Image 1 (cartoon, rainbow, N blue to C red):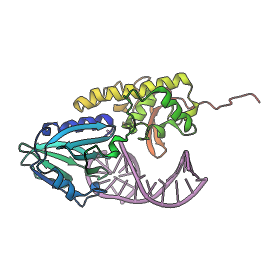
Image 2: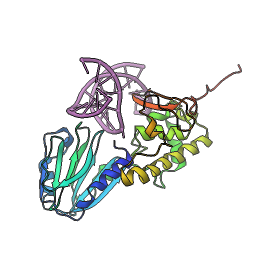
Image 3: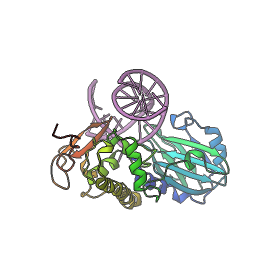
Image 4: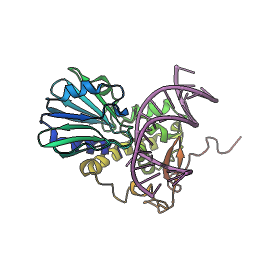
Length: 274
DNA sequence: CATCATGTTATAAT
DNA sequence: CATTATAACATGAT
């Protein structure tokens, strides 16, 4: 589930733990989600400390404990954050559970593509502070987008939108939603987009991010039927704009969904003449 | 049983 | 070196 808005939503699930002291830590330290960090250090670092802040950036989450303990969470494909009562017994897929007096803060991930990191330092860890500007940041400017797409002009738009190094938080459904709204075919080479359409694309990256945060991010509910979102996985799904049947097939290794009528492939560079 | 999945990354090939 | 394709990860849903 987790792209930028879902990640934000899940981060808020742990908000009841803000200001609370972690009394006990249960974890499945041998699981893949702890790759690259020490479960022992994590347990010792968090125990007895208060959860002091919660932040998200794209698909990344950062929880601060006390002054100098930082917990990074990435939800991968199937990760979720939730709370249960403090009597909760960790289930098979509850790989990290932080107990406060009144609640259990749970990281659950059946598929184990998620990742937990732990760092002890006075400043936030570098993997966090070096994240690229998010789509809603002023630094995510049109000119910066244009130069990025220029640099990778031969690559289709769809896989470019999935690059976290430039579009942190954008995932498969958001990319399709953005292209659908900008009426751009997922295979359009980046350099083939005229400036005017590029403006639209830039706008849509921001619009979809903002709208997703205001719906999914706020209450976890799916976006309305005016979006591509609720139609994209349905067999026989129709374009909510023109009712044309939606097309679904892999583009650069991921399933893409688009409307054959609204999103025409790029025209050949030299249509005619000799 | 086969296929597919809202993600990332190592490795191979171009 | 840059880009692109593929496999792998591990489990659950259909």
